Length: 377
Image 1 (cartoon, rainbow, N blue to C red):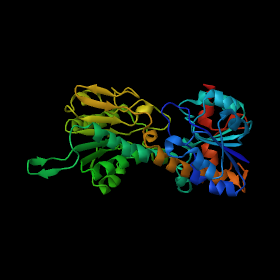
Image 2: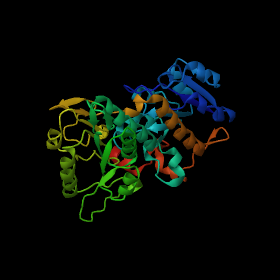
Image 3: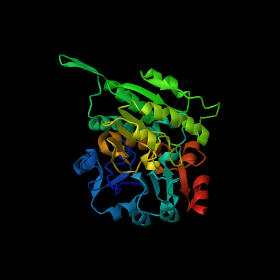
Image 4: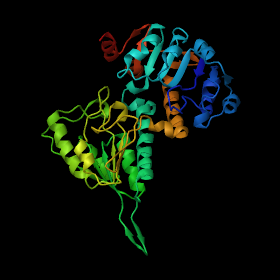
């Protein structure tokens, strides 16, 4: 069997699907590995490192696409690359099937079997394959570091001969993986941290990290969605949260917002008035920018300065930490490959709940009902 590793072509993407240290076990199974020249350079993996690991490095991308039966990627392939795929090959990566299903049409028709890392079920046996959580960990950390770099204040409290500097106040909205990592990072830097999440159950995790949890009475509304995500809320429930956020934002030096609902636009939790009420020099990092943003004023991918407030709307923070992002993602990929590669050969069993949940398309047609509905629409 041939496994291909290609260079990511999305603007600003620096990650790679597999690193040289990940190849030993695959090669031991008799798998031939082809790597596009330069695929891992930004992640600290040179062509020579792949060669030393036993892979073959090829400059011609088309050759890899035409020969590879198995292709782990970070992002969905562009249409031209999809058209060059070996028929009935298997592609694994972040496919964005619920956001941009039409972008997969060429690969589906090839036909290729597509597995989306976003759709891996959040069950115990699949935790080691949960790439969304891995990348959210990196994003939560990097969000706070980016904010600290922009903030014209220090994070920790300092007692000096010239006087005492109070600690920065950080407000984290959303206590999922990214939010919890943001809390932990801000606390390590010495900030005073408050956090809000519509899920009251998140309070225990927030408090365990040394932050204050801000609770809002949502009138008994169920806020727990599938897979540990928050449910999509009514406008009335959202307004109660917005009122709290506006009040808290007025004394925050940094806000990191992470609230998202899978397959839906990000909920608008921060009103424009809340940003206007923030003090000059403060920083807002909207990690939900790829889904439209949690702030009404967010322009995805654009950094703005509004009345002295810096609003960051990054689209791919993990790509700013490519070495460890690639390390974590490659481990997720390897654990997933263990389900479909048996003794060096492909063995796709869609009765397996993990494979069935992650599969977008097989045998020339979409098999995920949500994706199928979107494509028909």
